[in-house]
Amino acid sequence: MTSNNTTKIPQKVIAAVVATGLLSFCGVMVETAMNVSFPKLMMEFNVTTNVVQWMTSIYLLVVAIIVPLSALLKKSFRTKNLFLTAVTFFIAGVIIDALAPTFLILLLGRLIQGVGTGISLPLMFNIIMEQVPRQRIGVMMGFGNLITGIAPAIGPTFGGILVANIGWRWIFYALLQFLLLSLLLGLWGIQQKTTITRQHFDAISCLLIAVMFIGLVYGFSNLSTSPLFSWPVGGAIWAGLLSMGLLFWRSLSIPTPIPDVRLFSNHRFAGHVLIFFLTQMCSLGFDFLIPNYIQLVNHQTALLAGLVMMPAGFGGAIFALIGGRLLDAYGPRKPVLSGAILMTIVILTFTICSPAMPNWSIMTVYVFYMIGMGTLMGTVMTSALASLAQDKQPQGNAILNTLQQFAGSMGTSLAAMIVAKSQVGVGKTAAATAWGTQHAFVLLLIFVIVIVIAVIRYIPQQLHQL
Image (cartoon, rainbow, N blue to C red; front, side, top):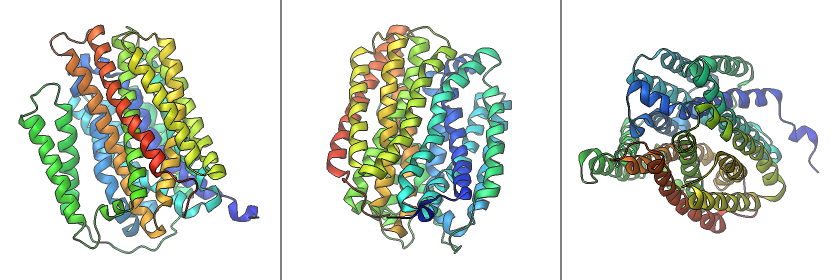
């Protein structure tokens, strides 16, 4: 039997996890809070549906571009210095957005916030994998996901209250207190556990990553306004795919690649990545579709949209922690498969019923989706990293976090594109938005069916190594 001394998590480790987790919390908080304000932003800045979604997409894109560098940054710089840099960027971005006079400046602030989150996001998971006893990794990963999972619970309501009463700019002002708390905890709790050795920085790989992500997201987001065989769509997608091919080729031909695509030769890890990627696409698609449906189809306020989404967010956050405990007790297969099946049932329900769903049914059904997703996400990430050798886990962590952000950006862009396509020629009418939402849920249903198949194929009964 393992003694309590070997399984006790030090207070400084907990503080470090909370500090780094709070930065991700703030990123998700502002993202979900701003989602309910999209109709207001569209009117105030005179932008369309597929333009306003860049508030989410540009943030996630920048995070996806920065995160692949996390393994290199971790080896080259002290963890506390990386954390302080991340906090500084995030605070600067929040202040810019709070004062932004134009939509372009608003996007600039989100871009700067993305740099901060891109640096900080992998730190939380690296700290957990390095400094938490093996017997407690599942529950601590659940705790880390609980911190970030609370944000979708309170973000829409928080945003709705502020938008309805004092304006959307106060969303950014209110975040400063969380960022200050993160700074204080990080200064006390973050410790250096690994040796610093300067690594080679491959600028070409970074450029290819940026072109790949920007090209793919920009191309798909323009499908609603431009023909497939046009520069804004076909040209952008082709540039993204070409950059992806060149990135894979370069990663296989240099000794210290960014990212290390050789990890995908491990089929179990690759299967976990597929599940993780598609789950994030579904979740961010939901985050875009539901607040807009409630406001544009059911003709409710941003505040009510936030209140409808709040119970589901709490359910997802709580079950992230429960999923970690189930992982420690039973292994990854049972919680992941249960979560995937629950997600499938919910998305099928939305697909069938979305042309006419009252708010109470949206709230009830969405709770079950978030319970399934909360149970699944942290467990999949832990199991994915357990399929790799310990020295490869920072690179695996970088890949997972990169694809999580890219998947979120793609999920938002595709959902916005499908809804906007349905609104072409008729405007943002209730009927057009309802049909567009249903079409978007058909796509999410396809994704979640693939998730269930991949869970059965790739998720093991027990963790093999950490």
